[in-house]
Length: 162
Image (cartoon, rainbow, N blue to C red; front, side, top):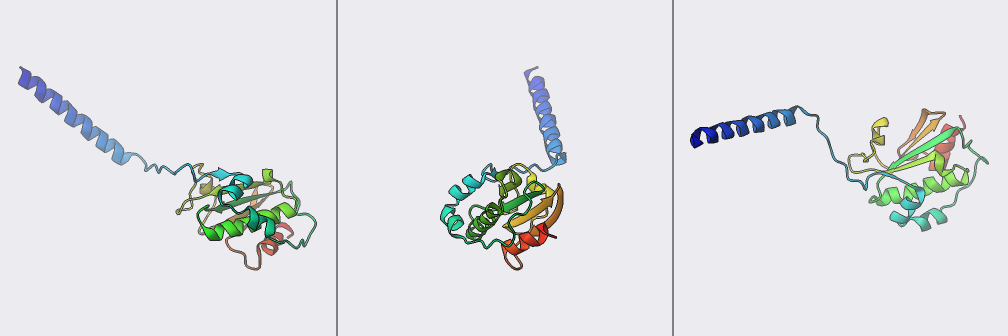
């Protein structure tokens, strides 16, 4: 009698494990992205990357007085462990500040090596390198700068003043 009960329990366990394996193989791959790859405030970016001095020392020659702060949104994807990103994002932030763009019009995301961040905002954009700056006007994507053609300022102005 005990042998029959054990056989039934082993059989039930085998069936349960088989079902779990089948379910797991059919479920979509869910990647867990480390929470350090997330949206950051400008202050937290500058502090985390220790780039406050790079931000303060960067000189911007204003081409225009203003860009038009209410109609434009700027989304930056970069990595806090990339020395190139640290310097370039400091420049971008200084340019946007000099043109009167407020933090409410800037989104800054720390992304991993696969250009992903934990909030999933990276899925809205095509990111192939960092830093990348996306410019939206009234909710419509009008520009993408992956590395400036001329300079960050000239490229930003090109999209915002066309």
